[in-house]
Image (tube, rainbow, N blue to C red; front, side, top):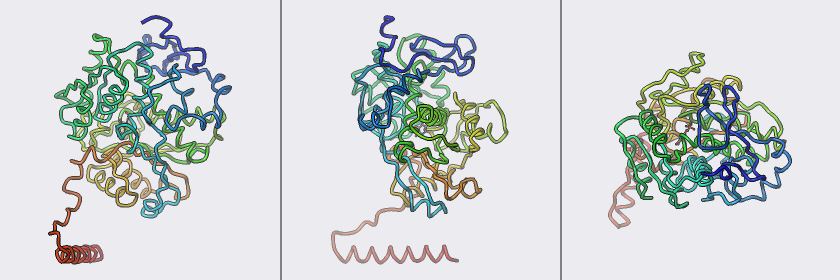
Length: 432
Ligand SMILES: *Cc1c(COP(=O)(O)O)cnc(C)c1O
């Protein structure tokens, strides 16, 4: 790797890696931890350059993907890896709102993000574009499932070698959704936190680009686009309240950073946005720290159906707690049963089939409404980050069954009559 590859071109707006704790700055290479205080590194930008170059019009003239926000992302190239990631629908969720007693509820639907149906395509598109600029030929990740799908797919598109690490007990859809791209897949007997520790060692010895380890500062910036898009799709305005799931806490903190940058550059008016976070009871170290009013995270051993957000030792947990606190939001957790109900509620009211992380977020939204923590008239945006077809095990046995019939009209009529009778009986049970 040569020094010129490390330096962005003059049009680039990112200028250094900066420690979130002590402020020490580093060259823009593949590293993620401060050598002095061990704090996490974050990408720093030239805000004057952003001010000069970015307008609403310049963004709208860009591609219909996350790359319309390229000046806010840590890549130097004008030809990033663009697989259509981003610009997912912001759906006005009127039926779900009515069910919950709200008036202005939106779903940001990354269950249909491209190419692998989760928000991880955003972070991976950025990380692999930067990996290519830094000269890596093999990319890798420690994943709870969705990240492996994304890394394998986008590496295939970009022609990069790929080796991913997952816990061995993942859902079948997540495993197949990786294998199909023919990467090397290491299924580790252990939970995500053990997978992640192993990967840190591999990153040191093999010189691979791990999207969420040595490339993490670049990777995590991709999540800011979930903030930018919502602001743009609301007509260049910030919402009043957002609810998002927390695994490492990175996504949550980067939506916040995205909103702040849009305010700083003058693309939207300043406004206080409340940030509320969602975890599963079976892996809720961030919610527990929030509840106990602690400034540190006590790691836990995950045990929940919400595997995609089951990180027991979350890297950005303390920053997530800080944001929830200072924005007057909250961080809540829900049971696996509530998560299943959340998945079904979103499907039945809005026609969106989300995975367990989305069920967690909807269940937390419901809990917050019931506790009076959502103003019915505030603009609330709920982030749905993954697709339910990948976690079918979670709802197996909790949905109805097809009515199997003969290819004859009377067989159909008979079955229809029977199902209506069953519906009526169910309703009577609800009423008594
Ligand atoms: C990874 C993931 C998250 C959360 O990611 P963090 O940035 O680590 O908090 C949320 N939802 C889904 C579906 C995910 O795959």
